[in-house]
Length: 160
Ligand SMILES: CC(C)(COP(=O)(O)OP(=O)(O)OC[C@H]1O[C@@H](n2cnc3c(N)ncnc32)[C@H](O)[C@@H]1OP(=O)(O)O)[C@@H](O)C(=O)NCCC(=O)NCCS
Figure 1: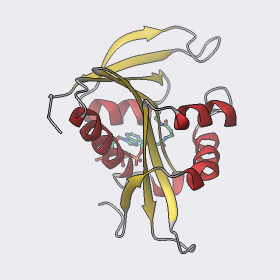
Figure 2: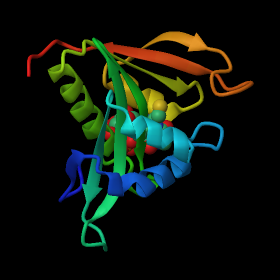
Figure 3: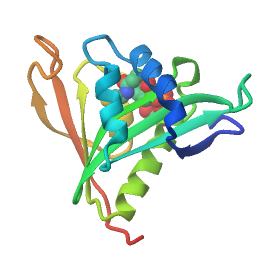
Figure 4: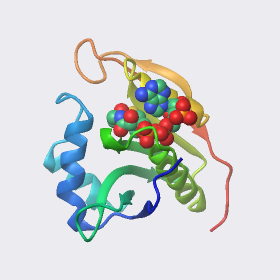
């Protein structure tokens, strides 16, 4: 069951530090994005970021997860999908992914793809549950001995 009070909203620049910190908590050092790279993705005209916010001690709530995608014509690339460990298995990742797919589809995107570490069982299960299929194995994608699956899903074309 999703968390009561959960909202999905567009990224705003004041979220930046929370998103950077979350990415560094969610991934090993070799995979997490650094400040500069994360900023360049978030500032790109081709990227789209949706944030999941839950009620929390701060007035503005707590950011529990986010999805960052980048699109080019009919293709959208999932740059990252992160959910705080304390908020996992409550459908936040799924809701973020569905929202990103809908947003991409409304802009004419017909194919979403991503890379995920071949050892990342939770992520692979999530992608498969949402209809993503392995299209390739990219050896040493994250550095020596750390390979990735490329996974892809066809989206139905929807007009805006
Ligand atoms: C992968 C991740 C985004 C999932 O987020 P989440 O909010 O927990 O996902 P959901 O609750 O929507 O789970 C959807 C489905 O994914 C699968 N899944 C999620 N976590 C799983 C786990 N730890 N083990 C096995 N399957 C898992 C299940 O099929 C689950 O459905 P179910 O709960 O009905 O069984 C989260 O674990 C995370 O942030 N991990 C670290 C960052 C990461 O690996 N991101 C993916 C980048 S490729």
